[in-house]
Image: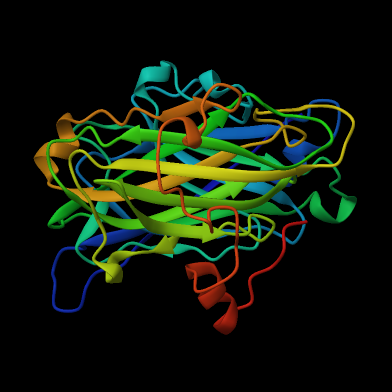
Length: 340
């Protein structure tokens, strides 16, 4: 089976400028990649990434019912260079796992995200590659075969005041059978020597999740980052207007709550039949720190780590999605579809 992908490049100059200061690229993967004897579950393509640019806007598009989620990663060298390859194994995104840096994540029905004007995601000091990943649905029909999952990216060539970096928080382990209200907890101390404004976050589970919450813990006080019902599409919420910062010594903590009505345990993993507990955490730092810092993921085991064993004053709403939240405010003015 021959797989094709398309890159469309648009260069759009600012008014009054003789040289273009930003350009757009559209990456596409055919949904036919997820059908037939050579189908994949996670499809990846790689495209060259110019050095010394900044990604400032993400606008995904998928035909209704075609895609579970999309993700973007930067690599020095991708796992493959040509066509579409199966990348359900996280080690099969970049040639070397330590090179892989998460850039953006999205799932079906959510809007795109434009970064605050004072920041962008740096493409690196030397040319590398951008890997575009799609997790396709297993039940695609003939109506989907001539369609594409795509994402439009805007790149800026002028350095903004701050660089945005994405850090991933997640759980491994399993969700026990016949268990309601089971929680998985994640927490890591902020290991940078500087404070950083939080510019955005997204919270995510698969089908068993009923609540996800995230907090900063500072001197025993819990500061809410966000709470969502993960049964709705995953939005990257802009927190730049909240003047919310993470400081040295803070702990960033995430809790996912699940209902498993089934008779078997549900493993954490990358298949859609598995579960996930993730926060995609975007913060902004000076360029010199972004060049030298390492974005180590934060992960804990669902069976071995529990907030109650470590912290006091755990918020009573940590597994509650009601009230004045970013998601509920968004729902009042925008249609946020339920995941299917």
